[in-house]
Length: 270
Image (cartoon, rainbow, N blue to C red; front, side, top):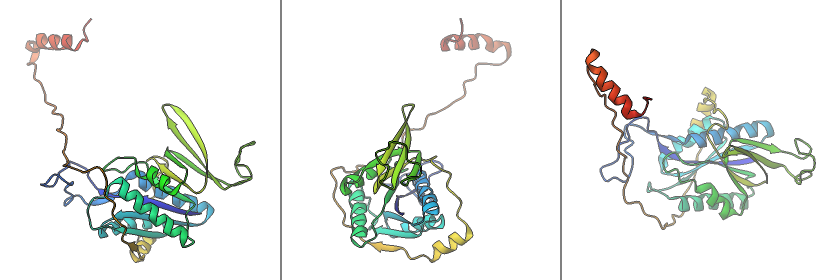
C-alpha cells in the first residue's frame, strides 16, 4: 500500500495571536511552527495502515525550506519518505497548492511510484478553507470523501459485505463519518483522496530511534510552479477579545436590592 499524506506548516499559537506590522502574517518569532492536528492524525492513520498491510508512507508539504523540519517530525512518527515542494516563502492559496500536489502525484505515477491513497487533514489549522483535498481529487480525477472519522482498507473476501458490489474487486476503501447526527458509510475504489478529522486516532509520540532516523533522512526537494489565484489577501485582523468584568453589587444586606433587581433583569425570578 503506497500512501501519500499531505501536511501543512502552520504557526504554533498557544496564546495571544500577534500579527506582523504590515498585517499580512502571524508573528511567529516567539511561537514556532507545527502541522495541523487533523494532518497529524492523517499521518498516524497512514502509518497504522502500512503496519497492517505493508507498503510505504510518504509525507509531502508545500512550503519554505524550513518546512523540512515539519516533514522530519512526521518521519519520526513512522513515515518513510519526505517530499518538500519548496517555495520562496510567499503564501500559496488552495488553488496553487492543489495544483502543485496534483503535479507531484502525476510525476510519481509516471515514474512507477503511484499512490493507492492520498490522505489529508480535513482543514488546515491556519486558513481552514477545506479546499485542497477536493481540488486535488478533481485534478487527478479520483473519488474523494471528506470529514472521515473511521477508515478501513477492505480486501476481497476479508470484511466484504454479502452482496456488496465491491466483492471480488479491491482492495477498496471503507470510510465512515457522522453528518448531522447520521452515521454515513462510503465504499470507495482505490486510488482515492480522503480527508480525515482529528479524533480518528490518537497520534503516537515519536520514539528515540524514530527521531534519529528522521534526523538522518534525506528530504526530496523540488520547486513547483506558482499559480496566480483570483483571491488576494488585503490584511489579517485579530478579532477583539470579549471583555469580562466583575460587577460589584454591594456588601452584606445592602447588596440584596441590587441582587434582586439583577435576577429580575435576567428573568430568573417568577
